[in-house]
Image (cartoon, one colour):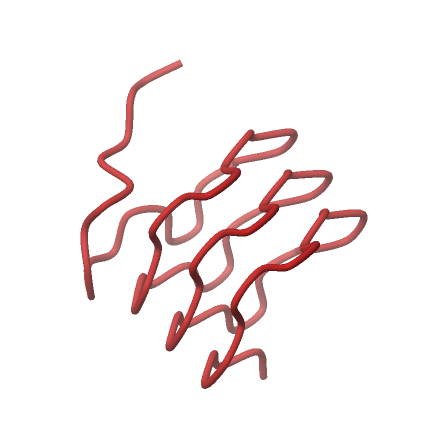
Length: 75
């Protein structure tokens, strides 16, 4: 699996990408563009997704325990 720089802010790091079963616990994804990303069953425990763009992202079965989704665009 290719390594992603998960500290990028306001960058398109996974738009339309397949991140099924990804382990992104405590990842810093503030302002990340994740629209249409496939995050099915991904683990995002305690991840910082503040202001992230998650439009049409597949978050089914994703673990978002204690994730910061404040101001995130989930439309």
